[in-house]
Image (cartoon, rainbow, N blue to C red):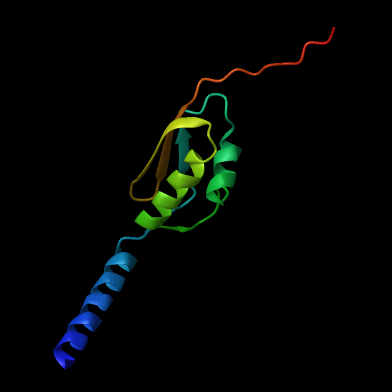
Length: 104
């Protein structure tokens, strides 16, 4: 029984150490590409930060951001890629029309 407890403790700490190492920092470089009609401020509002904010970036945050941007319903495709100090958000907008009321 004690051997199982020891292996669970080692397993827990190995996952914790891996998640800390995989985090990357955003340093004023969040770039959004593919948005022609939607303002970039709308995307920044959905991910919960401004372009000048410094935050830690991880895979779980990437999944959350993709979900939140997709939930807007404005994009058919959302992808996020990270490099050393930059985050690239690639979106493909849905085709939609604005209908103005006709006054008669």
